[in-house]
Length: 262
Image 1 (cartoon, rainbow, N blue to C red):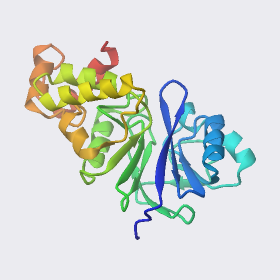
Image 2 (image 1 turned 180 degrees about the horizontal axis):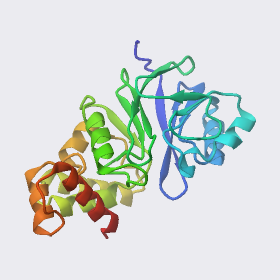
Image 3 (image 1 turned 90 degrees about the vertical axis):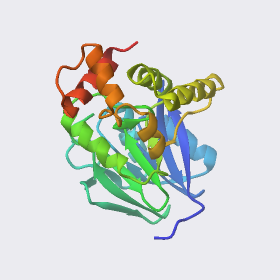
Image 4 (image 1 turned 30 degrees about the vertical axis):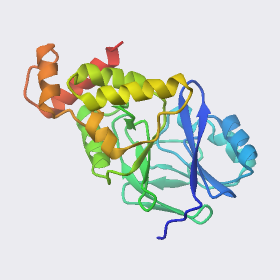
C-alpha cells in the first residue's frame, strides 16, 4: 500500500494528561481512543474535518467514553477489541485483523496486547511506521496491570519491541517525565535515560508534548523493555525487591516498584 504523504497525526489533549490521536488527510479523519467527545468535536471543527472512523484500544472510560456522543453526530464505523465489551463497537478486532479505511486512506494491522486490560489491542500503520498502543506502552514506561498478568504484559511489550526501530509510538498519556524519573532510579548507570529525562523535563517546562517517541528510543531507555538487563536485575536484587533469577518475576517486581514510586 503506497504511503499517502498527506496523512497527518494530530494530538488532542483531554482530561489531565490524555492524548487522543486524530489521523487525517485534511478532509477526513479517524480518531483513536476518543475519551472526550467535546474535545474531538472541537478539533474536527478547528481543522474542518469530517469524522470517518473511531478506533478503540481498550474499554477504560478515558479512552472510550466519548463514543456514544460522537455516534449521535456521526454515522461512522467503530473498531475495537473483540475481547472487551464496549458499547458502540460494530467491527470487533483480534490480532491479525486489518483495518482498511478509504478516507483517510489508511491500513492498520491489529496486535493483541493484553496486560493493562484483558483484551487490549494496538494498531500498527506499517507503511507510515506508526503505532497506536493505548495504555500498553508509554514513553519511558508501561501501563499498570489492572486485569492482565506480568507474563501477558511482557509478551505484549516484546511484540511491540519487535516493530521496526523507526516506528513512532503514539501512546495515550503524558506520563513521560514521571516514567523517566523511575527509569533513572531503576537503571542509574544508563546515561541515555538520564539525558532523555532532561530533554523531557525541558519540553514539558515549555508546554511541549514528549510524544510520540520511537521504538528504538524505548528499547534504549524504557526499563519495562529492558527488564532482562543485568543492571536492572542487580538493582532489583540489591533493593530486596527480587529474590529469584526469573525475568517475569523481575518484570513484576519492576512494575510493583513503579506503582509506589514517588
